[in-house]
Image 1: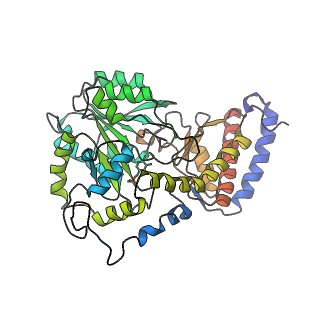
Image 2: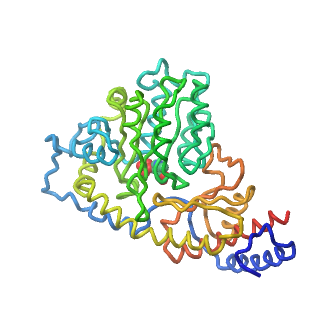
Image 3: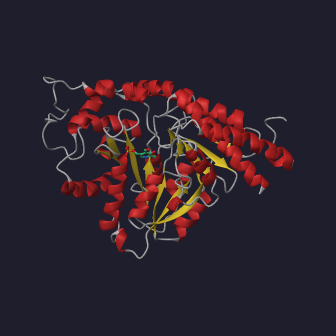
Length: 429
Ligand code: PLP
């Protein structure tokens, strides 16, 4: 029997025969007591080694003065040291007075942004968002589960919008935002999106910047987490949304975020937020109550280590050299094991941390379950949708960066086998 035939065209006894073969192989894997994890987008130890100098870059006796003369060992500098602002402003394509440097996590900054908006509103709000009968957010899906968790925490109703190949379905976004003033925002991971690896087209960026929003304090949460995280030589280009918002006469619409979590050391990185000066003035006053200032020593370490955009690019090339073979391995395996069978489709991203795969409708949960039984942990099916509910039960997020090549090879073999088994059962049902 030809391996790559469309399973939907196979006769029932051919499918049954295949199912028996796959079941035998599956049982063999189960007996190996594997313990492999492809669930979270974490750098592997070799990637972290690239930032080893971060641990020693500041030595006793070194100058710990920031560019403005302030002593980084002491309190002060609420929104970041000047050289960190300069570097991360360049990374996001904004000016240095349009950024705030935060703590170690951009997710933390996003959470706090939403929290403040619910309690106090944003610049230009007539009342706190939380005082409204309902607050809703658009959630391009599949998307980042931790964004959706923030909405759940604050009781913000999530409206799923389909992700297309050029970004969110903008016809739906424009219609919803125009009609409903309780829709206060949209989550966007605009470059190498989590999990699809899609980069928004210029037209999508322009439409988001220029669309008519019924809520006058509508905000785009622009989580540019993977802005320099290429995995191939083809680098996607993302249009600058802040410039587009200004050009469209909506200069306060976007809150941009990024961090060095997957550039240097996750958990010990530096996070950044960029937005209009008016937005920042409002936010600074609120942050000033929350903290006397961020970890300036960590900011200084980052600037001394990363230096400038050219160095960041070189550093990220080294990261890519480590993870590119892992992406290639997964993509080649998917092609050789599942290609042509009409049971799964997947994206081939140029960057980011994930490969997103769609099974036949109604199969994702069972695939993740079977893989777990054989010792391979995947992100829970549904996690990439609001409320953990993938209406077609088909999306699975594969995170190839953390396991070693040999672990990954076994894990993806088990995964493909599970897709085969569940698909055949689905077709036979
Ligand atoms: N945003 C996206 C899209 C992510 O995928 C992640 C981590 O996986 C984060 C934010 C978390 O970033 P940070 O470590 O800066 O909180």
